[in-house]
Image 1 (spheres, helix red, strand yellow):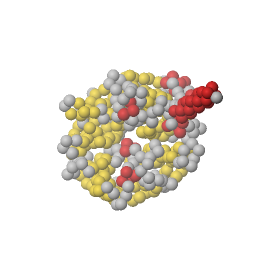
Image 2 (tube, rainbow, N blue to C red; image 1 turned 180 degrees about the vertical axis):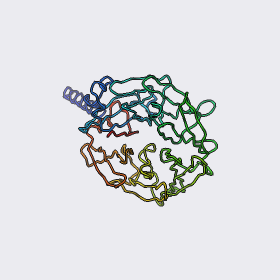
Image 3 (cartoon, rainbow, N blue to C red; image 1 turned 120 degrees about the horizontal axis):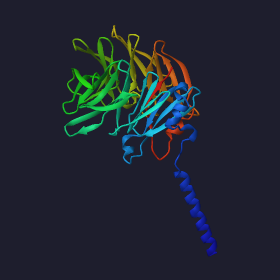
Length: 395
């Protein structure tokens, strides 16, 4: 009897061990979905890419040096291929002429019919914006790098296939935007509670030019909700003022490029609202100018328009079946060529994630495709959690 009890005890312990191992077994991404850097060029991946999504772990998950990111290429057949990289919270993608820039903590990678990788000496942990300046044939990546002995430093990596260099901007950057030639940044003085609009140029090195101080009593209750936008005559900022826990006023701050005169136009007034739910899916891609109107997409799936000549404001349209919950599932927005592209999530779909296209002028859904395989990458291995930080669409 004693022998049987011992056998039963050993069997029970083995069963418990197997159960523990099963429950704690790391999830793994299918090998067929992962790419090496060499395979990106060999497969001519960009020719068959419809969109690219940037995923990464958060900076706090990189304390052990094992943070990860993925450039996820959504193919024309709606399947995905992912390039694993090191982590970079708030990292993003830049699209140039027949080239793509992917970044991570230690590297800048240019992808075209060939790939070039540039290893950077100083690691970065929090991205701000990447972009491409066609007038200079120049890529750039800006980072909120952190406090230094004499203030704050935002490092800038910039270059092209000939090489990259690094310089620093001595300010904390609350928002940024780019045009064909320059990068516009909105800096925040964390001690004086002030916003300052500045212009960054890359003629014979990196230069920062003061444009204007933004007129406000304090930045303490202000929140920047969109990239810095501009046209021929004005800069545009979308900033909210938090009135209390459930009330907030969202306004467009307009700065004249010649006189620096500033005007404010209220766009949305939230009352008795869960303000967290109103936050855009991605601050960096939440607004754009198209055909004489400025469009802004909030976190409730509502898209507002501001007519640049008449200053008329209206709710242009809403995403179909948009959630009013503050819980997010890696949703993203991206404006391009008169369309709004939205990475959406639905628990009712087999693959959960899908990509929608809305016409800005018609205010209607024109296309929706399911993305096959993104779930497996988001539920990735090594007990790390990755989140989406950028979406770019190729058409």
